Image 1 (cartoon, helix red, strand yellow):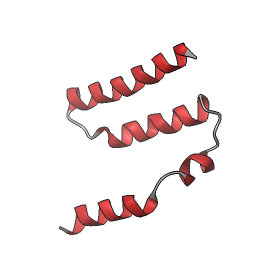
Image 2 (spheres, rainbow, N blue to C red):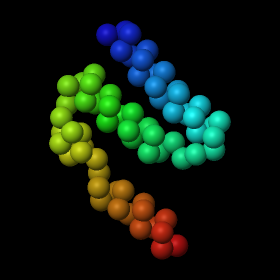
Image 3 (cartoon, rainbow, N blue to C red):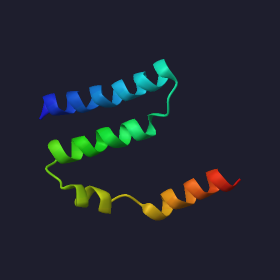
Length: 68
């Protein structure tokens, strides 16, 4: 269990380092890492993971960002 936690922390730390180094948005990278972690380490299906995403909140954030 401990090696999995260390690997997960390294992956998220790597995504932050990627964002700092190349000045890119780490949101999509981190979401992709979270999907991989959910599928590989937590034995969840893609449908299970996508059901947990609060689409209403994401819709509000995107619409406010684009229209203001």
